[in-house]
Length: 231
Image: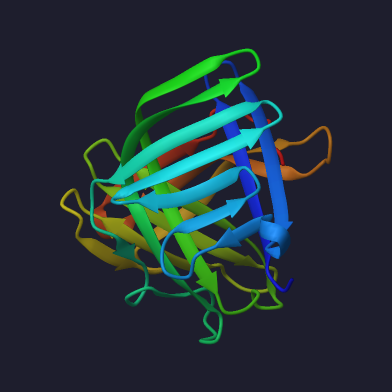
């Protein structure tokens, strides 16, 4: 089968400082995995993501329990960049088609072997990107932020890092009423403030950032709930 489906599920509990992650993979042969080209409807074995009417329904079964969440969007869909055309470098042939639901609300639960977590007022964000290629050969990684503010607005901001030149910046500001504005390198700056080194891999991760949103005269400090969330 030419179609390979992969999925990832991570669960961070900021209250007790625990983190778990799971992966699923399958080909479309024999009904192991599949997806629709007409609507949001994809599955891998007993993992599924689908849109039913106006609701997004997530159902994931792992060896530690079952996660279910039903969400609906409180704002219109946001197309990033130029009507969804989102560049990833100064070279025009590195891009994705990129859209988001930036303010999803709903409810659900995660029933593990030991605990039942109930989400009575879940708040979520959904990103979808379709890339045309890999990054530039000089680009070495990226830092991506999806931020829901208490005033009802949202910020998507990213930088693609390079080992030989300045990062490539892009983003979107979404107002309380759902109006979106594109952001470029002159509109915001991302600065890491603190790092954590993994005792398992010895990799170094930024765990605290400053986001200066110059275009709106705003500044935010973004901090990880806890350090050890390495995949």
